[in-house]
Image (cartoon, rainbow, N blue to C red):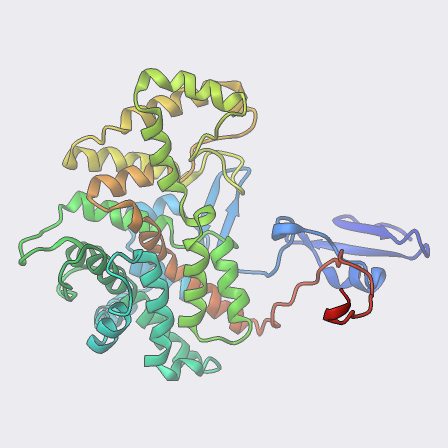
Length: 424
């Protein structure tokens, strides 16, 4: 058998049978492997080398440090776009015309309110100090009971209506969770404001006197765009897995919120702040780095599961951080962060391992300086990521993806007979 370029040939040594599998878009079709190998399954914990789907939404090249939404560089979108416009791009595949943009923003703006009965009954069921992310996750799931038409997932127009509702209501739900957590009265959304300004007012307004500085609005806008999608991460995969069972978008996004609630996914920027506070001062940075090299700690906010180069989002956030600190005053942890980055990037131990700052290294400092408590960090993440989750949910349904059902390698006891309780 003559091998073809851009293909892989696999031989089953048990039988001598061979199969040639073409390489397409950097991947190989598992069907041919399965036909040859039969009941032999690939063991891939964490699915780190498995492509579970094809997608046209986000291109992530970790080796080159490239992140693009639908082909558009993240740097250009972060500087020039807004989250509603990026959401349109992620959902529809193209940037909107002016008319499309205006209609889209109008739809989002006029679906920002949540039913008063829903807000009171859902949140009042929780303890006064319930974590905002727990409130948000439960609230998003609860929305499916208010919109039973969301079950009609076969209708593209019905899907789009729910997508708009979720993008519109997530900031309202998030702010409501924060206000409940802090024991503050709920602030209704002001539809005269843009998306990011409206959210900040719902968060921090007291007696209609709060007007967020334009630099803070821009920082929140940039951070939400940078978080809007990131390929098949844990929470996005959760959306596709749950959505493959034909669950409605509220239930699917609630599953994603649950995944994001886990500290290994959504808690990285909080871990960075804890690390910087533990270091305490610039003159202790060297000792901390040395301890990390000895295996006595971790350098939080450095390195990434996918990026093997400088995370492009980290550069954007670093610039945004300096702009925010000009308004809020410098975060006392900033100097430690800058010194830590300088020290690590000058050390071959970290450079040779491709441990560069990622998006979480500076984002927590920005959030903290604006006034967000650390308990809100994953909630903020969820607001930005909602358009990406919904884009993947929508794409998955358009692809008519089969229900997700991975295999396992059984390693338990062999067959054995039941022994009655009085004989054990």
